Length: 321
Image (cartoon, rainbow, N blue to C red; front, side, top):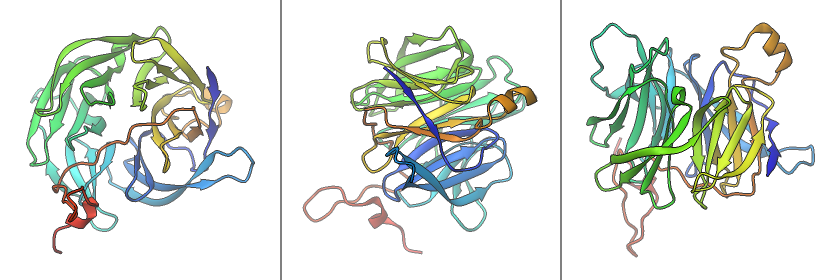
């Protein structure tokens, strides 16, 4: 199956990345990594008859240093993997440091890259060297109590993260390997085991990814101008063509999680390439005929229960101000 994504309204970013849908605020979050920006926007109807939504920017937060990814929190704040730390971010006021991994003291400049919450509300986040020094990055797990554990070392460009529908498999891309790997994932402990290749790419490098309710894995392919989807057994399912070669990530969005939002980048393109790709750096959208899995929120406060015993809105547990 071959599909085509259409560009969205927000102006192009340098390195747009990390889209995630927050079902509680009904907002799309994404970052511009090297510009140090967090975007919040809503989906609105287009007037072109396509039936696809557009993205209307609503809030822009400037952190002043690179921000690899952003996640929503149960408390209603945001958690950013920015610089070399995890920051709690609100719409007003300066961000506050929540936790920081212990990085090697080897003189290599590093920054956070892709991050995503697991189904239990932990944040997995990777690092990379600013100059992409091979093996200088790691993959970390941030627990809600602020503890940081190292899950993987010797990573070059830590990227795409996503879980199978039952949460027992973790898909992960170290982009320079040109592979998406899969691990067994222990939901109770947040540990990984039994790494093996899932799919390998001959053209381009795997970047961010998303998983749908059928267990298919949708992978943004940097350098190929595509998102490629694979069945749970690794066989090809679909290709989404994007009018920008540096496709950086994708996420299912909207109330029904049936819209695929795709981020792209201008960074690394020559002036000639930029003339040929005027929409590079924009967000793109398509309806791929699939429904995505809801991405969890960071569990900085516990879920509460309603009187009938069912989970209530996490915002009901906001602490007193």
